[in-house]
Length: 472
Ligand code: G6P
Image (cartoon, rainbow, N blue to C red; front, side, top):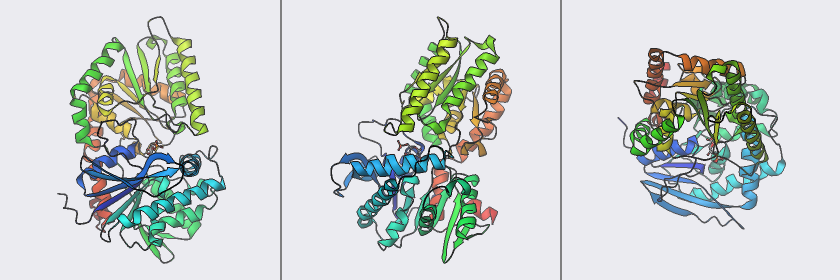
């Protein structure tokens, strides 16, 4: 049973995606989806950037209440957005934390803008926080915020959750002022990662670079400071997703896709258009499959849904161009008058439509080169027909691979492995599909977003979680 929370929960993240009154949602990342669900159960507040830009920062807060969630947002200046969001967050930290040191840009003004915006967040949110509130800060945009709040005198319990991978120490040390960034994390009481792998990279950094000491119970000591760091794998709102999958809209989407497939097998991919998602490698792996198995040409197609993201960042413009070119090239090479091998769609869909598309697809290709968790993999599993489920092909470099061990796990850099896995999935007997699906579905259902949030909030409240009690 969930206890009635005695304290309010203050959630702070770059984006605030409380449900909008007109139902507009767009393509939401994992964080937004997970938090809207979690916040509905808690009183409290969700604070962040409105997404708007203004000429001069005012610190004016816009409060809104929808569907049991109060949001409080501020506008940022053009320069803030450029240096903090497009700059340090998405041109420095995002590539570096996804192991793409070749794409990471180290520019001093980005770091300054990042600090400035974190200070602006701290200045505006501090007066909204009561002494008993639990404060839960999310993702790489806001790593120094906890330290900023402490400087303003806040003594609340504070937690930080990272929704992306934590890079190996040897990569992280390429970041100028890396110690400063990591030391700021010590202001929190609890630090959460999706998987043991990201946690271990963090612990390794703390020991190597900061001379800290990590205890088996998750306590980390650096000098006088102690914090609790652990893995809390995020899940989907299983119940809500099943309901979405059974909706009329999902049924219509299912029929639309099945009808247009005209008896052909459907392989689906759904990703924000991001270089970390391995879309080029995926297209090439699928191309390899068409080459290796000519008899399957004309019998299957790949539906890749990829809504554009962070379009002001050059690397994102580039990946978009490459994918336009590559999909066109593969289609030109293999298409017949009545068959196109790749349906490449740069548009986002709502959850109900997606649930219908997932259910209509025999295979999901979820092959990021590196991913903190990946919730598409879990949604695909949740949407399946238990009597005739599809097959999940999953990158071993997604956090989800540590939980969904009955997926067909592949190295996303290897065209051959992707090609072989597609063939294995197409040939897989129904009994095997059911067996694998049941085991994955159990994990997705049990370790859902409610489980994730309870575990993190329990740690934030200073209680040992069930898993930690069992371990200790
Ligand atoms: C990932 C990040 C989130 C982010 C989302 C969408 O899931 O972990 O923090 O909100 O991508 O990216 P965007 O830049 O559009 O917010």
